[in-house]
Length: 95
Image (cartoon, rainbow, N blue to C red; front, side, top):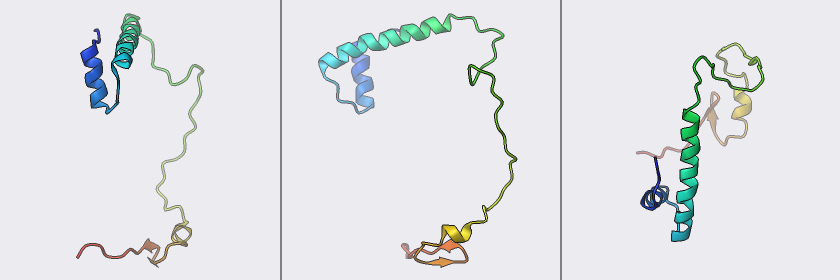
């Protein structure tokens, strides 16, 4: 796949980027270089290779999935101007 000047300008417009003619021309080469590198990566045979999250084997620390309220409801609403039974009270905005 190759990127041309029109594609760069279109992508810049969609991304709401102000790109002048010189910058757009420079980006054509940069984007084509990036796409060429990605095409090289797709040629690598990764059959049988498991995905990694790190280059060194590290066991993830896990915690028990327990639902709690944190037992700090009073602390959370302590600085609120108005509360009712640990809930924030706000002015009515819809009639």
